[in-house]
Length: 254
Image 1: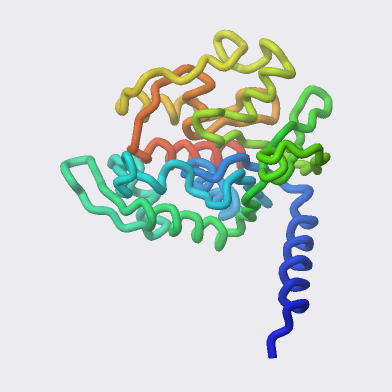
Image 2: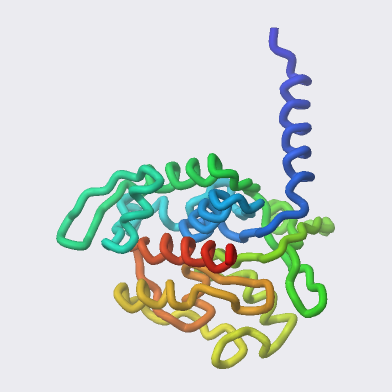
């Protein structure tokens, strides 16, 4: 006979044990879109202790909706190897253009990352950073519902050797730093430049180029990197997002 209290205790104790074990890690990622998930996958696969915070209930970012809610995504030749590695099927539409199912892409990438060792905490938002000796050494997190309800509830802290802003267009972690340390970001102006208008080719090329450290201990990946550095958006083509996450994992590992 099933007991409701046993069910409740199983959820609460399991979650709290996992959360407590994740308060000090090698890398903490904000944002569970394609770049954040890919970065987490490769870092975990390399043996790093890595956690990811996603403010929404579901991970995947904009990949779920494909283009205008047609749930298909396009990946160019350079990014297809990542699809193949994690087991996402794709078909060549024209030479160099590969189409994948958005739902399969998100669910398979998420599963691969979790099985590699990535710990994902959904419904949690990053509201601040921890700074020690002029270097960011962690996130300050709270339940997303607290922010939505505008409740005065103090957050908790997570220590990490490096933190990643993979929050997409809003580049939320970079904006925290911009507010608190004016002119200190590693950009031409010291500030967030803001993303440019759509150019799929330029956006896909620059998203990998822009991936890297934007402030001591803080790295940007995915669309957050293009937003910070002023490069174009690219629309529903996702190879650059995947390659950005992989590149950042390689940078942090070294």
